[in-house]
Amino acid sequence: PFRGSVTLDGPSGTGKSTVARGVAARLGAAYLDTGAMYRAATVAVLDSGVDPADAEAVARTVAEAGIVVGTEAGTERVEVGGADVATRIRGAEVTRAVSAVSAVPAVRRQLVAQQRALVAGAEAVVVEGRDIGTVVLPDATLKVYLTAAPEVRAQRRAGQLGVTDAAEIAALAVDLRRRDEYDSSRADSPLRPAADAVVVDSSDLSQAQVVDRIVLLAETAV
Ligand code: C5P
Image (tube, rainbow, N blue to C red; front, side, top):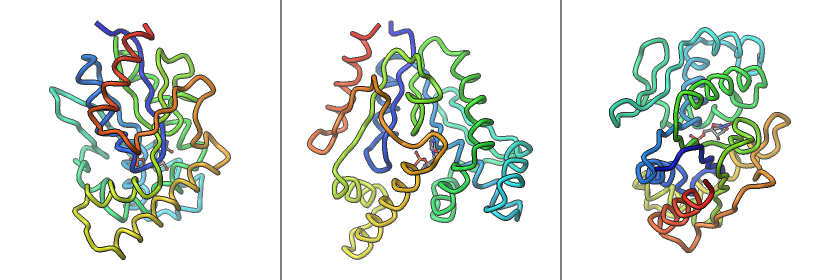
């Protein structure tokens, strides 16, 4: 069996979450979605009424929020202060605000510490995010950076949301680009491939093919 850690980083709309779940299932590994943690932090900030531009207040709110992200008996759990926010974190309001909240260094410090503690308890784990290979787990067994052409990513996101209207797809593409630019240009832990990451371009691959490729890489990386 696989023992160790696989990091999966990359921009939005690459099919990263589906691939990460698939790889974890095939390797018999735990799965951690760090984006869900930043999204849960964003729920706490939105509900607190603090000014999102006030980094200190944002960090304090996140520290006190009681963020729980994990998988138990195959069910993914996302909670803020005991409330189930698994559906709400995927909504437009949270998606709009999440990059600003996750650019606050004190927020990242807290969530990175929480991520490392969760990973430390697992024999085998797949961790998905933006900075996992570069910052969170620099000694991971295998680091993968998943990309896809921008048009492909917008199409996939549209498929997930059931959007078929061309203008709406174009708006999704704009939103993806805005979030990626924000995530890639922030000072703290910007989105970029680790020097030792394997870059996988999924533009012309099915999700099953991407999973196969990463499982093979993981099994030969041990
Ligand atoms: O992966 P997902 O789209 O759910 O991530 C939402 C946002 O959370 C990203 O756009 C990024 O701003 C932030 N994020 C991050 N670092 C991570 C995971 C997510 O900054 N490790």
